[in-house]
Amino acid sequence: MKHTPLALLLLSVWWLCSCSSSNIAYFQNADVIRGMTLQEEQPLRLRPNDKINIFVNTADPLLMRQFNLFANTSSSQTVGATVIPQTSSGNVSSSSTGLMLAYTVDEQGDIDFPVLGKVAVQGMTRKEVAAYLRGRLISRDLVKDPIVTVEYVNLSVSVLGEVNRPGRIDILRDNFTVLDAIADAGDLTINGKRENVMVMREVDGEDQTYIVNLCDRQSLLLSPAFYLQQNDVVYVTPSRKRQRDANSIGNTFSQPGFWISVASLLTTVTALLLR
Image (cartoon, rainbow, N blue to C red; front, side, top):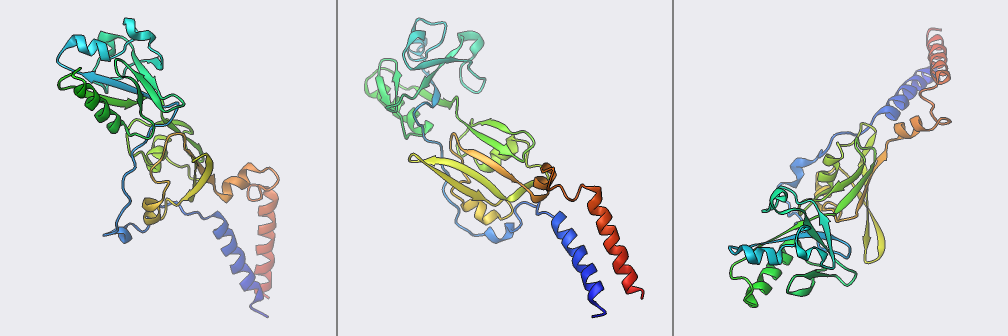
């Protein structure tokens, strides 16, 4: 019984330390994945309402004007195209040709392409769309040796919760991962739970939620949510400390009365030990 106050003191100190500690280190088992078979890369596949840029590069400037739609040409009224600024990543300069038109995938999964008409692109990657259009142009003897480039326009994900810059993140490349999205959002705050990052996704008309553990590299790389898809929502769960700080009633540790009680407890335990 004489050791009871000491045990209470140690238990109190342990409890306080455990409540304030958090797991903030990423990829803690990196050495475990050596030799592990990783999942295949997952390029994005087009869906209705997605927008893409399509640029056909040929040696004949007349053909280029025929297949590439810009806002300052007579073809700018083509159905299913949206005017957007052309970025420097493409093979065409907006300063010399004006604003490029983005093709919107309609509800049937088609785009309306010059000369070819309706082209079904739903479920295709951008590389598959480029290869398909190139094949159609060549097979119809419209262009001999075209270079077809397809770029994403409006694809994005939302990153919310305990990150430094929450908001919508544009997807500008294939195989866009949850790490890419978090990096673009300025990384997690110190109050974000690394082992409990939620990814919400619509799959075949149903909402699916995946839990991603940034502390476990093996499970992270094998997670079905490692590669993100357009319109995914990434939510970083706040830590218990962050939840307490946000709750005026449960904000125990920031209240002076709590620490007065702790000091009183320690004083009482010390007096009992010195008897």
